[in-house]
Amino acid sequence: MRFSIYRFNPDVDLEPYMQDYEVALQPEDRMLLDALLRIKTMDDTLSMRKSCREGVCGSDAMNINGKNGLACVTKLSSLSEPVVVRPMPGLPVVRDLVVDMTQFFENYNSVKPYLVNHDPVPETERLQSPEQRAKLDGLYECILCGACTTSCPSFWWNPDKFVGPAGLLQAYRFMADSRDQVLEQRLDNLEDPFRLYKCHNIMNCVDVCPKGLSPAKAISKIKELKMKGLKSGGFKAPASGTALAGKQISIKRVP
Amino acid sequence: MSTGIAMPYDQRPKNLNLASIRLPVPALVSILHRASGALIFLLLPVLLWALQQSTEAGGYAGLVNMMDSAWIKLPLLVLIWAFIHHFLAGIRHLTLDMRFGLEIRQARRSSKLVLVAGLLLTLLTGIWLW
Amino acid sequence: MVNLPPRAVAGAKHHGSYEWLLQRFTAAIMAIYTLGMISLLMIRQPDGYSEWVAITDNNTWRFGTLLTLLSLFVHAWQGVLDILNDYIKPLALRKALKLATLLALVWYAVWSVLILWKL
Ligand code: HEM
Image (cartoon, rainbow over all chains, first blue to last red; front, side, top):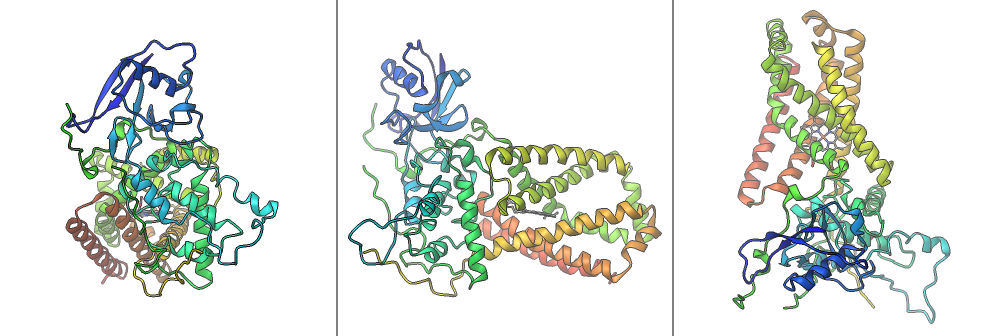
């Protein structure tokens, strides 16, 4: 099977280039990741991320024949040749198919992706009714692989200002949680021309999500909550410096 | 050979070769919505000038005359397409904002509809005008 | 316990929701006008200057058209800002283009009044 793979090693290459491989696949090679690892036995300089190799960890997202997806759950039989494999778009390339996800995680972090509840910690769990719990379906399953965010043109042009589909899906995941108490602040946290509103319903995010989730729907739910907020008292942009303003936790790069 | 000095992250290349990235139909409709909006914006002075001309008998006749020239017809058709596409894609956008048709299959279908209807209506308008 | 700050202070400059809503509101006005104008042209089938004048020489048409044109200019302002923010990265150039856009649109608004009332 023929492959054309994006190569870049910052220590030796000035520019990225495409390298062609012709691989004799073995019967057990069924997914793209199998083929890439087969190639790695021929050329061990080829770099990629992978871990669980079954679509759970979200490590091996890449651009496959133009579409973002997880190499480990992309069937080789579904791909036309030569299979063009490139790193996810819009993030700095560390090497070959490995991109620097710092910006992605900073944006994720900026929406405070955790429950905030000021009540005294109860003896047992904070219980939800089945209906309340059902509201989180389609939101909690995200594995943060980055496929959606890096397929989004709005993210390409404003990676540091637009939160992106993955981060916004998580923002809504906590807005929709009956145990969370800071809905208003979460909405204010997205009040500027970029963080939420750079979404133009392009829907590439839904197109590529390997988990079949819909960040577009979550985003439009957030906009709906925003409009309800308008009726009851208007919007405020968080002043810079407050904990929910913009992004303030900076994630240290591991050298 | 390794130089031992890592390239700073902000100087690293990004994979943004747009020709290599697939463009689904909804994304095509979206970028054309933007392009058509920009085109109409750039041609606003021409449109206002035409409106001004049409308010006087001489100017009106002049505009009618111009419409017969092939050099005007083609750009005019492009402008008409831009408006129709922007209009249809805009209506689709508003329905999505009201949370109709947000399922990906519906969104794909409505984007195809907008694309085709835009071209078809442009054709019909052309026939109607000339 | 995580402590989040109180609701942000009022008066912060950068909004997004109002602009977003305005973009939709102006779009709706233009859409209604477009449909109305198309119906009018279909019904009246104006052929020649005098019939065009018959449609346009009244204040209902003038104010409707002015409202639509003003909506258009507000809409275009938001839309062009959006485009410039995405593609024009040098700050000075982006600011210059925004200013030029604003000035052009203000001029178009004045010009529209001049045109509609033949001043
Ligand atoms: C017939 C009426 C129109 C409708 C229904 C309409 C609808 C829309 C909508 C819903 C948006 C928001 C898109 C988004 O947030 O991504 C938009 C954006 C825009 N519109 Fe219109 N529009 C109309 C007429 C016009 C006209 C006449 C112009 C000419 C200047 C224009 C220029 C733009 C521009 C430049 C954008 C920004 C595009 C972008 O950010 O990608 N629109 N339009």
